Amino acid sequence: MNERTVATGLFLPPFLYVAARILPLFPENDVGVYFAFGTCLAIALILGLGSSAGQLVAVVLDLVLVALVLLALVASATFGSFASQLTAGVLVGLPFLVSALAWRERTGLAHRTVALAAAITLGTALLAARATVLAVSASVSPTGFVEGFFTCNLTQIQGLLAIASGMPTPALPLRAVFDTTFVALCALAVGGVLLLALRPRTGAEESLPVATVLERTGRHRPPEREIPFSAAQQRVFANRAADQPPTGAWPPGLGSVLVAALAGGAFIALAFVAPFYAPLVLAAAVGGVLLGVAAVSSRARSVPRLFQL
Image 1 (tube, one colour):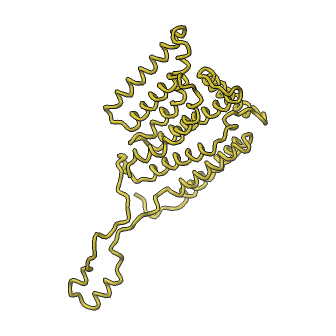
Image 2 (image 1 turned 30 degrees about the vertical axis):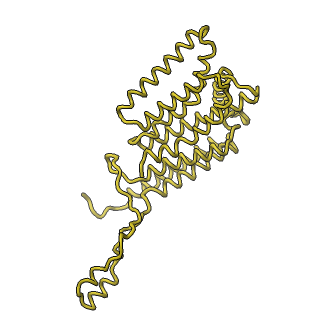
Image 3 (image 1 turned 135 degrees about the horizontal axis):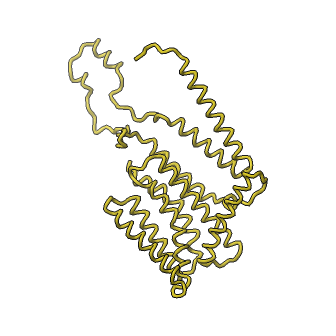
């Protein structure tokens, strides 16, 4: 199983879907949007899939894009709305840049998870900004989309602060946008992270071979049929284990991964249904888990050891 192929195939679709939902809103003459988005996508692919020699190319492209945005902002009288076009394109391409860490070959599970979670949050914010802008006007301009994006995120932060202060019905733009297709694609991306996490590795992060079904190359006679063993020896060979390696095994820690996935899905569902009670339930669940771990640890320490090293 090629790690890069799996990561790219599962991590890209959610953000390609977001881009497909937003980019057609801009007129074709807003070339800055498409140029900035294409540059961000190229940088992300080089960072995530390229070799060490390609990292320099990604850095150069990044510096060129930043320089163009700054130049367009400084000389706004000359470039007009080109700065807003570039900014809008960068915003649409930002999830690809953030999730590029999850595509890298030797990235750890923690970094993959954080990178993918941040990219999914950005994708949700972009969809929320799209809904906010379209609610005001059917035509979308790069300037209006950039303003809508930052306004939407500011409102989301204020809503979270309102929840912390005890207000029952805060305004949460990201919660109001629930795209089932985007959620399904994000679930596939999360499945890719879990799939890569279950692959056995050494302490130096080197991939270990995975047991697979081995197909027979041809018919052959068992060795006990070729050698004149006695009848008693034949019965022993008949009762021996099969001469095929195991085709798979329950990966260590898979049960914990499945429980964590179910718990995370339940919390997300609760956050959408009852956001006011979600932090309280999360805090109570974490406290219960910590108490359980402490109880198990104390019990393990109280068991007498038969052998002392």
